[in-house]
Length: 340
Length: 273
Image (cartoon, rainbow over all chains, first blue to last red; front, side, top):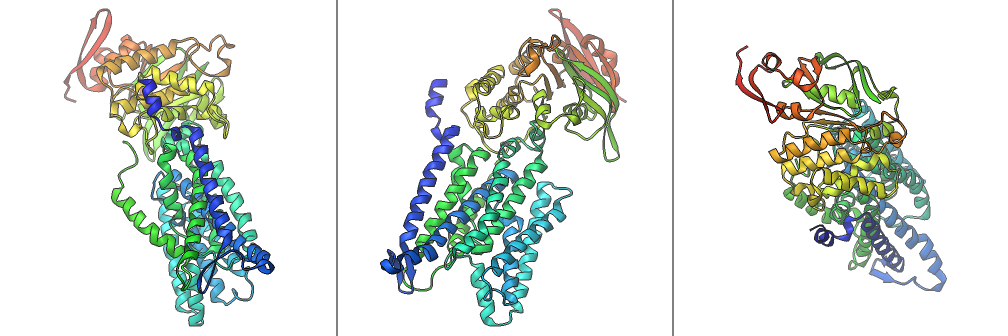
């Protein structure tokens, strides 16, 4: 009986299985990155190779490499933070956008556009987004920090999202010129095109500490599987776990939104696809979700460049088009995850 | 080694659930907390676990629980709530293994001791056959036994369990009570480092909230009877669980008898106030 059961248990249920899965997804992400380096896009559709030996190094370092690195970093961030938030809230529908960090960052960036600073200095835009993301986190803490229970946090996140969206609409309403409004809209759609290594250098210092904060909460997320009270009896303070995940997510996602605009649904879809492969273990989901998010985003960004000639699709549009039906399907099939 | 509560009281807003209570509990004892609904049993148990804001102090072998690092306290005191949450459908074995979290350093994979403790806990609750099943595919009673195994897997010198047998069939009620008694009296059952060194570190302290008075009387070494937030009696089971006390505090007329030398207590008739 035990022998049979052991045979019937998939290898991915074991801790080692999570590392195998991470390794496979990392290889996939690297393969996608390598492919991404040789595919470009011009007004007449996709291009392959580097356009001749004399401009190859410029094409590689100035255009393809930043785009590829950002796809990996942003996708990884969204996957990791989505998995951590789902573990924290113990809800498979949780998403980084839930906390208001994305919409806060978007509003910060929109303000920069609104005052016409974006053209003058390419760093003003991401800086504005970072400030917006941190402001959203501060507002979240001010609204929910005292009580600090999960429901209050989610409701505060919804309020911040609504408020940031309203302010963004206001900025659009009073946009100095139709061109500025269009620029704002296009930026908010989320894209990896036309970024430089400066953007990578700007996002990475926010993402790295964010990732570390989130990963350091891994054991606390496992303990929370049994509820806050039992987690406390196992020596894990739910409040501490919570602020590690939320603070880390705000930093990392703020950094991501700052350089790419809003890319939705990656943080929802990736952890959900991988959860069963790691036996629903919240901590074992984190690293695979990072590499899964990186791979998915890199592949999506390649797909965008392979589209027939025409205006380039925005990455955020593609992830939303694919993610929204997925989200609906999840809600339709949703049954309480708690076994009680 | 003892778990000592001094003037512990618990209030939820204006409502006082537990009036100032002092009690000293030692390793080797299987203590039943009994009393009617709302008597303060769970409040006392949570306060003893260090999981509930309360006035007064609770100390484990001389150290106030507040002063202990959370992980040290978690290794010393295992706790099973009355209705444990279960948010992800883990395999039963992995759920039980969560009880080893306080023993594992960050990022460390489970060691041989962790695997052994997990298997031991599954065997103790007769759930080894369910180990490779997802916990959302278990019956309520099976799940309750797996959750009890999770608390056992800590192998703590103090085990606090809230109604551990309420969901179980008669066979497993008897089995779990016998197991808890054995855990309390076994000389080397726990994982704490000084178990072999300290002469009084024998067995474990097990405190269980129970409603089955026959099983409490038969298996427990000591009974605390609570009513309206007060420990009204604290003694050997046969002295506490007498007809007069049950009539007064439970408002039932019981049948109290002896069968094969063991106590048998059957609530028979409600009493008018």
